[in-house]
Length: 100
Image 1 (cartoon, rainbow, N blue to C red):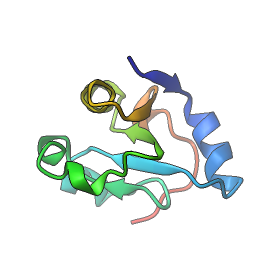
Image 2: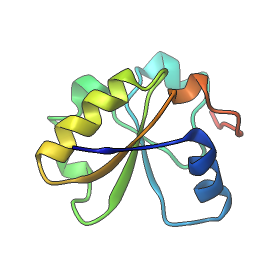
Image 3: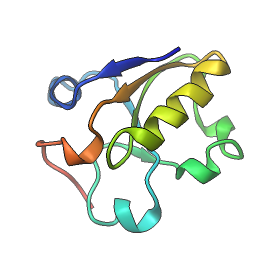
Image 4: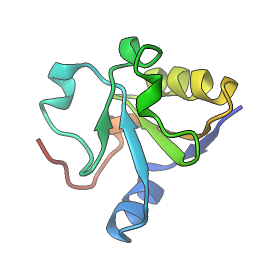
């Protein structure tokens, strides 16, 4: 099972310059409109084939548009022993800055 984290908590981590690993699982065209600064992009459909890009020794925060796809990604990773949190509400709830 994975935990949830709020967008405000994620923003505090980003602004606090914490060593935070954010993985955005939205599609390419969605990410092109803006993502959380420093987030790594792996579309949900590519996650299994790109699993080697996800370090097993770090905590990861999963992000999508509304929190549903990132929830599936969180579940997938948690089942494989990864330490993950799902950002509740996704980018629809994100009030922080974004980068292209």
